[in-house]
Length: 115
Length: 114
Image 1 (cartoon, chains in turn brown, yellow):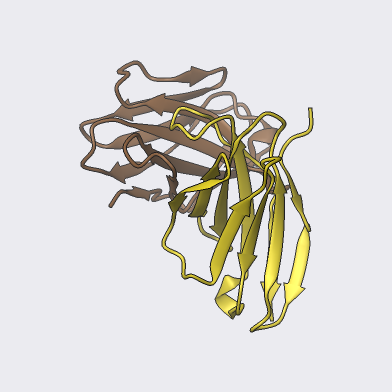
Image 2 (image 1 turned 60 degrees about the horizontal axis):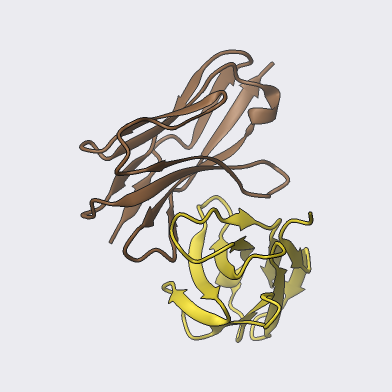
């Protein structure tokens, strides 16, 4: 069974600085999708960025980028120029191409932005 | 366009009772998934429905059931509530059931079991 691990329960960063959130996963599959979701205090889960395992190029969405290391089964999220609105819980998630109906989630990292 | 909506927002029940949670997907979306998020943890997959048929089920007891209606809205039912069922229940909709389809989440229903 696949698992997702986020080893940082909480991270803090100064506004305008850069922060990296870690995620590792375990799978025997070669094709899958990885996601970072943001859950602000209002609770609505929002997709931040996604990566397809067969694509070697790291995904980028504006200030958000990932470092996808397939061999190491690592999928970190880098947030550049952190803003107060980035404060939230961040979840890493895995979705198999074979059993594609479910997202498997990490425990989350709480990101605090210091003004 | 309206996003995914869920009702009720909050719910308080006692042990042994039954509860029904409702979800309306984004217009045009045919797939609905349900997740349970216990406080301080990541969500856990419960069910996925696509075109009114169950496509997947997570590791939850038979007390949990769901269905999808012709208009693609969905209900999640939980019978014989336990204290451990207290959680935020999230509904997500997507255009299709394929892995490449982005899931859009509703605000959730906070269930408290006393």
